[in-house]
Length: 222
Image (cartoon, rainbow, N blue to C red; front, top):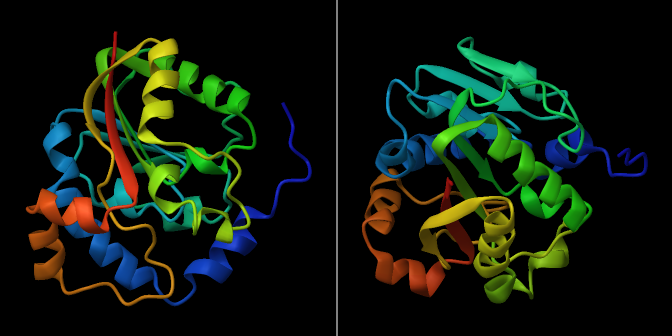
C-alpha cells in the first residue's frame, strides 16, 4: 500500500514541536518512570511504533529498544542504544516474528489513513510480539475531544478506547487495562506543568476523569 499524497511528516512535526523538545522530553521522563515502566521489565525487548522524536523509547528502561518510524528525524533523535527501523508501517515490518515483549505507541494510530492500515498494523504487532506480549496504546479519544480532534491536519482515523479494543480483539488480543480518559489532549503550544504536578496527576485517577481526553489501552496477545 503506497500513500503518495500523505502530508510531509517531517515538516508537520518541525512546525508543531519546534522549540518545545526539551520540555516534551522532561514530561516523557516522568511518564515513563512513574507510569509506563510498570509494564516493562528491564530484560524486555520494547518496540516504539511511530516513535517520532523518540521521547518514550529513549527514556524507558529495557534490555533492547526498537523505534519504528518513517520520519527522517527519528534516527537523529534516537539514543545510541535504540535500533531504528525506518519504514512505512503499512508494508511488512523489518522486525523478527515473536522477538518483542512490549509494543508501545502514542498518538500514532490516528495518523493512519484507513482502518485497513490499522488492521494491518495490529496484525504486524501480533506477529512480532511473543506469546502473552503486550500492546500499550495511547491516543486521542474521539468521544471526549471531537471538538479539537480535526484541528490537526494529519489526523485521519477517529478512534475511541472501545473501537480500538474491538479492532485489537479481531486481531487476536484481549484487553488487560482500559482507561477511557488518561492524559490531556495535547502539549502543543503550552508550557508543561512542573514535574511534581505531573507526578501528582498520575496518582489521581479522579483528575484523569476531569482533564483526560486521551485513552490508554493495554491489550495482551492471546
